Structures are given as structure tokens and as C-alpha cells.
Image: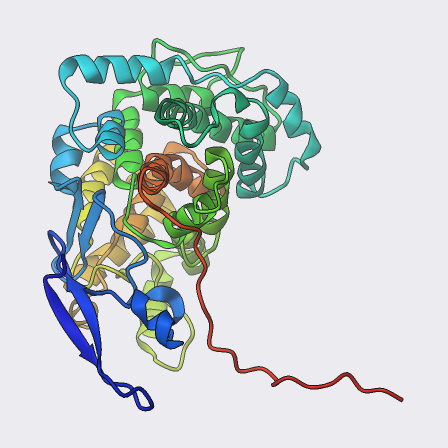
Length: 426
């Protein structure tokens, strides 16, 4: 039932058109324009920035107020009181788990972390110097060739099994991508470790030497995953939904999300932060680069400051800054040259009136890039880490769509090409 209605008057159409207006739990009202097609009219909205393409109960963002809610819970509260796997459960099921449900869920994920042994050989088809995201697109999509026993998307149980497999196996594949790039043997997952401990174990241990994973670094990794778990209808999530609307299997849909995330305008922001710090090179150059950033005629931009959605502050950044401080103290890296540049830039951005007025505050990508570098993860792996954390959000949106009365996505266009014309004959 519509809460209100909008009246649209169009030249050439005798009667005004009544369009239902719906009000969600939070956020903007939505005008239902579906009936326009019967009048041979479409809306025009490049980038879908003013279009609600779906109804969802998963995540809500208010960029003006710096609000990010997962199933109603503020992100800062989840970061403080929850952990990544509990947040995964919340995104998938809509409620926080009971103690028993969480224990069962964590056990299930731990027991699905291994990948089919034949997948090890799959990596040999890639060059060692391939971009990690190129390999991730391939190997995640290839999971559908190994786990096709539970891919009936109309079966809720099959969807849940696939969800568990993806959340469990993508960290294993991410670590394998890294090991392959440096020529080290793959490390098998260990069921006695937590999700984030296990990831760092597979990333940095070798068969020759297995070191205990630092609890501080494991906690930092867990928070990075948690703070990236979902972000509403962004480009990659919308891609997953669009691919899913065709009836494609979940592994193919998540691979499509990874491909969309690879774009530098979406998932490459924290990698761009490190590239910027390397371009600045030394603390003595900071003032000159800040001046370049303030110059409207100069194409240089400070990466990791401000956010397309959050206009005042990124609610994830405060949590990530605290984690960043903990990691640098644990590793004794306060004097690392690039990190010193980053910390001085952070100070300037939080004190300089130019940045304050324009809302150019350090965002989650700024701090996560610093943390990942400190841990020892190369910048080309940053987007792979992002994809690992975002997997439960993608799956939750895919499952929500499949569970609803969905239809195949088919955007329209404003055609501005040549009109009909005849092929020239001699």
C-alpha cells in the first residue's frame, strides 16, 4: 500500500499520472515509476544515483549523518562488541545469533575452509606476475565447477550451503593467490584457529616455520573484514544482484562482484592511498603535495580523504584509526617513512580549515591501507582483502533477491544514435 502519491504531468498525455510513493523504515521516500512503461515513458538516471532498484532489509546508510547500520545495528557497536563471523551471521539471517547458533556457525565455516585439491593445479594456468584480482575472478568463478552438488538456487538449503562455502573458502583462495605470486607453497587452513588468525597463518607461515599469529594483528584483520562486510547498493553489490537476477549460480555471481570491485573507483581506494604515499616519498614533500591538492587546476588528489557517500565523516574510520594505532604500536613501526607521511597527512586533514570545510576527513580506506601495509600485505593484494570481507554482504543481497519475487534486471536507455536508414546499394 502506497503511503503517498506523486502526480506527474507530461506533455502529450491527457490525464496526469498518479505514481505511488513508498516510505521505508529509514531514508528517502521512493516514487514507484513502473507504470510509466505503459505510457511508453522511461526515467533517465545515469549511474542510478536517484533510483531504488530493489527493496532490502540488510543495510542502511545515511551519508549526511555518517550512519551505517547492518540489520539496524550501528557499525561502531558491531566493531566494538561483535566479530566478523557473528556479523556474517547477522547479515545472512537478519538477527544476531544465540550462543549456540554462533558456535554452530563458526564450526561450520571452519570445516569448509579447505578447497578441492584440484584447484591447486588451477593456479598454474596463471602467470606469477598476474594481478591478484585477475586470479581471484577466475578461481572464485571456478568454484562452481567443483561444488555443483548444491547449486539449485530455488532450494534455501542449497543457498545456505553455498553461502557457507564462499565465506569459508574465499580467505583460503585469497591467501593462495598471494603465495602463488611470491612462489611459496600453499598453506592449508587450520581448524583450531579463528577466522582471521587462520587467514594470517595461510598468508605468512610456511611449511618450514609456523609462527603464532599475533592476537593484535588477528583482531585488526577481523575488524578490517567486519568494517567492509557490506555497504548497501554499491557497484559490486548491484552487480551481484544483476547477475543473480539471470538465475546464475552463486559462485558466478560473487565472481562478478569481485570483477566490479576491481575497478579503481570502487575497491582500489586503499591501494591508491599507498601509491599516493609512495609518490609523496618524504615528509619534506608533504606541504607541496597539500598545495597541489588545494589547487583546482592541478589534477592531483589526496587519496583516502572524504567519501562519495559520507559527507561529514565515515563511521568506520574512527574504529579503524584506533585499530591502526594498536597495530603500529604492536609492530613498533611508528618510524616507518611512509607511515610517518600518512600520520602527518592525517594531522593536516583534521586541523586544516580547507579540509574541514570540505569534509575531507581520513576515511576507512586511509587507515586500512596503513594497517595492511604494516602487517606486510602488498598493496596489490588490498582489493583482494576487500573482496574477502565483502563476501557475506554480497551473499546476503543475492540470497535476499533470490528469496523474493524478483525479475531479470533490464535497464532502459535514451537512444541518441542514427535513426533507421537503408544499407547503401550500388
